[in-house]
Length: 471
Image (tube, rainbow, N blue to C red; front, side):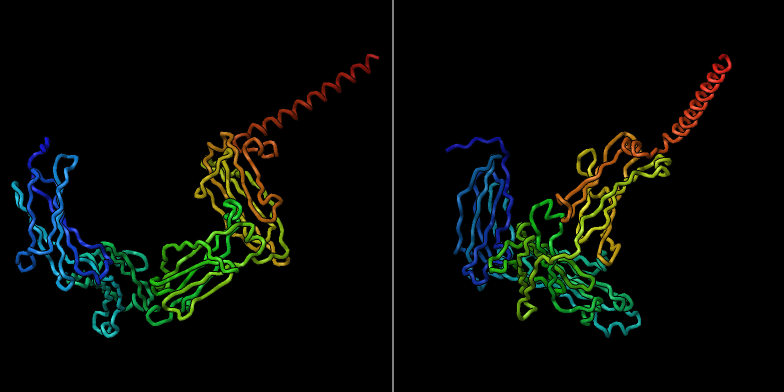
């Protein structure tokens, strides 16, 4: 067989092939690989040696070379070694007419990475400089290198990194005043197939966080009306708080009859006390939620001896009432500045307080970043009623251009669960509002019309008197 190619004769490029992180440590023998790429001609010989430069002749396999689309070749060799000797570096050599290459194959990754953070030693604060050191370490990484990032209350700070053979350590120096102030220090580690973060602070280490809570707890959060109306489904949220670590956390939602729901667990979030919180959500039919079905969130965590279970059911609301909705045009004083125009939507007298407000411009939904909604505010206690408002600010040219703006309000007690009010420049004028641009013309027209009416009355009076005298 003859292969015709336009590629130039080239020595191989070598790459190590090792087990992925988390491989079974009981595997015996252990397989190591060596990949030779982009060589030409197809003439290559592999050999293996150990870390003492002794040649290895047993447990070697060579696989047939493969022609690449670029006209060069790729070949692979494998070495099987006893697990007892696998935790050392082996060397693969590829002999080729255009040059020999050698590469070291690191030990396979069979460990389980572990990360810890150690608070500053109190006795170091007694030194004249009043500083101490927080130590962050990670062991059994697949890679001999890692990136350490330190944060103080979420803001990056500089640190010192010490590289070890199996343990990587980073140190951060803190002052006694900063430590006593309760600042949260975070160490983030990122390496091949590993990424994690640990936090420490004085309140956390002494078991007295600022919010007064130290135990893992569960909060169940009911769905909001906007999700129910727009998605036609109810999102149940189970929030697990005050976790020192999220490892081993298991959260599940189920119906009261025991049938499990599909549960989605979000990324963990850092709390102000240095611990973590996690939200786990499940979706159910809006009709099931509205009729009062019960749902149970179960949380299992290594820090808890027994799982936590919390039930969520829609609570009935007494003295419920639909909102009254009003839309207000931009004030003439603002329009006189010829800079912007603010349209306001007011919803008042409603209960329960769960409500949503959206804006439309010429029938198209406006991005929620372009308007501001207030939280519902209690306006009366007996009976309980709330009010809220939303402001949409646009430029003056859009307002004068005749665009229409619609306030869409959703509440469970509205006849169709939603209502809307629309405003534009023309409807404002018809409703008796005059913008600043037309105000002078309006006043002039009022004066002129009054003069014309008086002139006609005078003319009519003169004509009548003349006719009487003639008779």
